[in-house]
Image: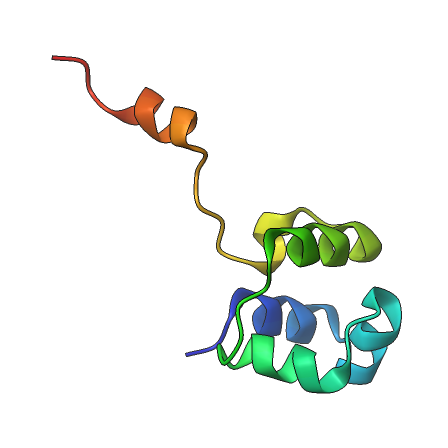
Length: 76
């Protein structure tokens, strides 16, 4: 299954070395992230998104904050 990061990179026409150069993440690590063999830390997700100029949610699945999840729960 392809990751959001891989889908974004391909849709934007970037190679792994190009994304590596822009984000400071090694090509090997980028490949592992794309294949789901490694999980990016929250800090890495934010750093990559900032350096690429996109929201984190464009690159990674993001968990809603606890208070956002609570707000979506129906009140009995």
